[in-house]
Amino acid sequence: MYLETITLMKTLPCLSEPGRIIVIGNPSQPLTNVIPYLATLPDVIVYNPATCTVTFRRQHGFMTLYSDKVYITKVKDVEEGLELLKALTDAINVTWSHRAELVAVTAARSAPRLLDIWALLPQTNCKQCGDATCMAFAAALLQQKRSLTDCLSLTADPLFSERRAALEAML
Image 1: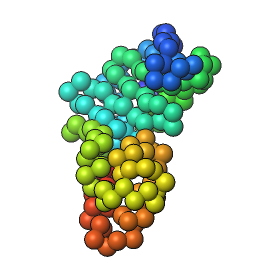
Image 2: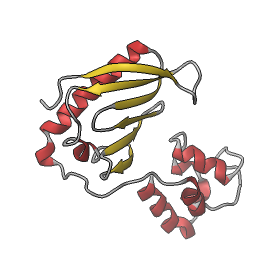
Image 3: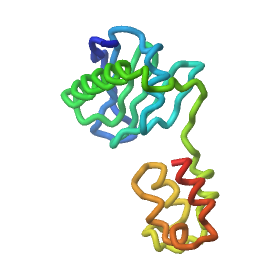
């Protein structure tokens, strides 16, 4: 076991979603050694080995781990925050116990930018995906509210196969 617990330090109002909170936790020991292994997990959007931080996308909001603290955004209430901290502790311990099977990440990773995604879309603003513009669709892709298969032009037109492959790798 790597970590005994992550203790709730405080909560803050979540400015991006009124009525929700940001949970700040303090791990029982520094996360420095485990963060490079956590960076191998799915839903990592940013990993910075220089500052030893990793950010995950979660269904609602984000979770950022520093060596000495954890931030979880868009949490419903303190009770959910405590459950999330417990689940995170368990996930950290499972990852640590399987570290021999993982290759620690040493290079920085960053989330794709909105314009990078938009540049690879057909840019026809055809509305077949249900969004008003390709830019709106790109934003929905970033937020994981849409799938590449929702873009019929990207899926059906063989001319876009390389762009689709690049987007799949990006997302």
